[in-house]
Image 1 (cartoon, rainbow, N blue to C red):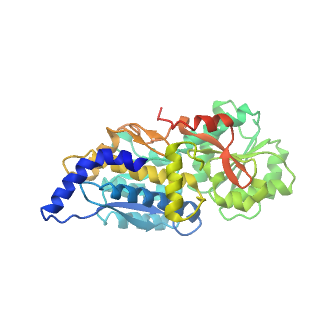
Image 2: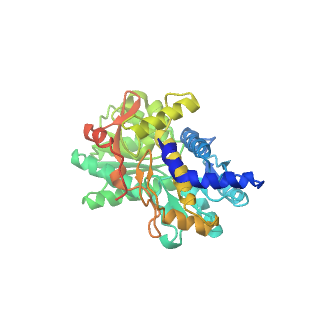
Image 3: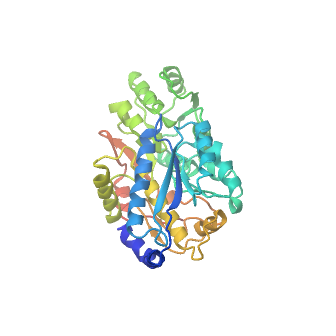
Length: 400
């Protein structure tokens, strides 16, 4: 699927590389940085993230790489810790990488963005969704790109859905991380667009084991839906707390409600939860089926812990490669790669979306709201909340 399409664009450049090898030239790998939480509390989505990237890299190298040069991932573990992430980012700038793909945690990303911007080295964020990530610098000057769905589109997408369902008395539960704070503000803004306000707002630290007091306060305020914004087991704490109170209101949120921390941690209390998704691990078309089959073969598993992370990283590696393939003069400097990402001439038919001009000088976010579908937890897995979404998902969406 993707490897076939990639070969069409890469064959000439690969041939040129092979000719160079025949003339006795030494071919060095083209290095691409990769930073994520491969150990620690966010490893459940960091591992599928790096797995998706490695799968794409294998396919690209099998098709000839770049000018006959194999691509090589330079991998660094940020452990979901902002200070560690900063250190790893600084180290990465000494690794002679053409660009870096990285970050699952908004707070970790925000701590390190200046490293890439100052070095004029492109960073593509395939996982972290906090809205401020791509607003830290004026878009024309920014070296920060993103292929995940920012919370500024996830929050309104979910709010639109719950309003249609008549759930307008919203309690918001947000952790105290950069992710929780940014998500809370996006939810408040999305509700305001519907002339609504939260009936209760609860803030909490990561690692909290009991939110009964806050849940009782939300119940007393008359909430008929809980909108949660946290990336860890706290989502499950909320679900189990509602269950113990016998408070039968729905739980909705952004994509972390599809994580194992929630689904496995909350068990039957997770059923019915709704969340925004860019990719649901069902073979709804040929591209997605091919990706799922290739992932299963490579990693000998029929289940991806966080499918969105794997698919978005896979697509991100391809997008970066498509961009640098358009550089014909061999200039792989940061500014040249930035310009190539902003002016991609070829369409990439991806797993999560069909990317035609995903970035521009004034827009560093590749995902728009039409690419989202509503997922629902059912019997311990994420599926489509609506039959219409399953039908629409047969056709890979393009940016609007």
